Length: 463
Ligand SMILES: *[C@@H]1O[C@H](CO)[C@@H](O)[C@H](O)[C@H]1NC(C)=O
Ligand SMILES: *[C@@H]1O[C@H](CO)[C@@H](O)[C@H](O)[C@H]1NC(C)=O
Ligand SMILES: *[C@@H]1O[C@H](CO)[C@@H](O)[C@H](O)[C@H]1NC(C)=O
Ligand SMILES: *[C@@H]1O[C@H](CO)[C@@H](O)[C@H](O)[C@H]1NC(C)=O
Image (cartoon, rainbow, N blue to C red):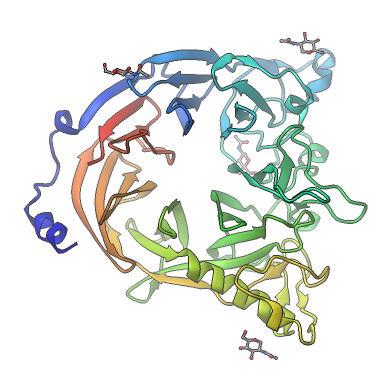
């Protein structure tokens, strides 16, 4: 660690582009900007989705397949199953909203703004083939170009009598006012979906595996989903949203559910705070989880052009969630947040909190959801005088390097010394002025990093 520190001061900033960029794939169509990227961990193949297109690349940067996903005859005010009756249908662009790999089913699940925000399952080995089943008729994601969606695949509840947990899809979507209200009102803010049918995973008579923004707040309380991840039998979503329905202040939050909880009784929200010199950087910009149990994230504020980098230990995150859950079961905290349910006092469960351990899932069917009052706080490890759009982390034998993508086309290499100390040691210009999109992936050997902008996929040396 010390050796790294010394060399940092010797490194010359802003290296010449040629020395670190190994290869570039130029988007042949400027009307089809790239947006999302994912790697199949089994084969190393990279899938890039943007407006109207998905491409498949190998690690040698050869485009193996390229398929058109739009434009298609569609209209935001029509039902996809009645398009033949739709008078307003027209060629409509397909904006990529989410990209996932179902490694058990060997499918690339690509969701777009078309057809009220539906998904298609492409064969991983041949994306010209897709499943023509009922899953493609489900409305899953945001149906316009800009509203946020975060979706990922992780273990879900075990079915009755079975120990193995099948995978489910966790989806967070911003409510849109685009198109029919009663279609949008049927799309949860947060839910789990069956990976095969893409239906809501659990639909009981009174509870479902979904959470909605309460009707009167749906149009005004927009939740911006930033990042989702699974860790230690919990699934998390990181968001930016107003502090409450009566507040104008924005905060960042982590939403958490336990993976073995089909009814989402464990749904809990806790504020995520990133501080520097007493100031709160309240707007989460990007986040990524790294192997040794840490969440790395970048935050900005409404007022400043700079960014704070915060590192949260997952153990701290877990213990804060449990502290908030305990505070509810001992009657001191509240049910909430108020955009989902009325805020009411939690009921005290006598003698129960002793049973709540760090890995506690959920046993009681009251006191849910929980709006935690005690935030998860970190002090910034570093501040940067730029606006950031992406972060990822490489962990080698004895050091951790964060790659931070900026909104103006740079990649900043940052050595993370500890949770509260990090140094930027290299500033690489990838594409001047272009936003580095949040999906950055390493090749199989973790020697190279793939990044995307609207116009380019770049393959650069990471070590
Ligand atoms: C990539 O290129 C290397 C060296 O030319 C070759 O050995 C390897 O088989 C190639 N891999 C793929 C997936 O084409
Ligand atoms: C998909 O299935 C439907 C109904 O089964 C059929 O009408 C349609 O032609 C199929 N589409 C493709 C591309 O196979
Ligand atoms: C998409 O939906 C978001 C969230 O409701 C809204 O703010 C935005 O204006 C919509 N965009 C378009 C192009 O309609
Ligand atoms: C509830 O638990 C929290 C800590 O978990 C503690 O600070 C608080 O005093 C407890 N309240 C009651 C009423 O037991």
